[in-house]
Image (tube, rainbow, N blue to C red; front, side, top):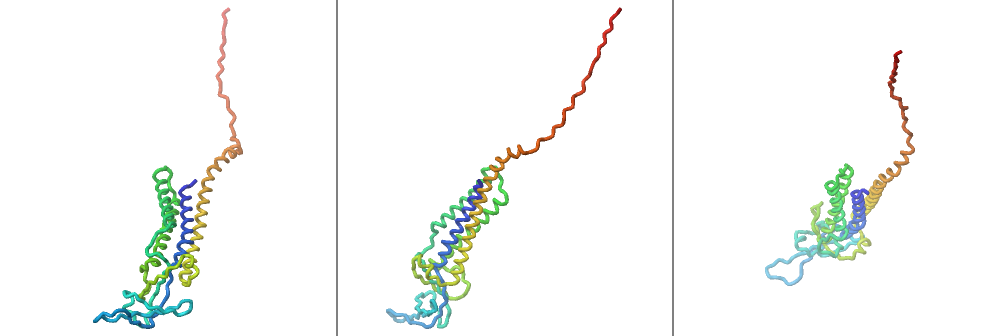
Length: 264
């Protein structure tokens, strides 16, 4: 059995499950909305003599077609906002405050180590040389697995800690946590961008799982071919036509005749 290709197929199948389940579910852990500053509310509390009274913006955004308003108390982010400014609001449903790997990521990393060990072990320990297929296919699978892990950790950084990932706009950004259980993430999905991303992740995951199963089946078939060829070899030898044998030509012999003369 081709152990290296079997590990590659199994790793690809695990990556497909990771994309279709863990990564697609993590996309619903946060959603983005556009809000607008509609008013400024003065701060309350004990006033300090000589200190300026802070003003906090009242932000309005749409939730299921209905306007919702709240007062943003993020002093570091909203100090320069004015009435009419557009801001980007990121709501996080995750209950975590820091990024963690999880069991599926650790399993995927273990599979990647096995594939790398299989490649180096085949090249160094055994005398068998790796062909182009055994080099390119594991390399592509390893690259895809690392890319999936990076996407998952990137999404966790955005949903759990509110870390700025990639700013496509220059809008002010607010991060608000709404801790919700995982089972309610799918039910409250209202962001079409995240929905399309989850559909693409599930589609890629299904394709990866099918390709992984195909590679594992191909590695098993490749193992059975030598045995099949060996079992058919005697039958083919029996069915082969007999070789024509040329008739043997006798070697020439020398005949010596001896004549004896008798005296009278």
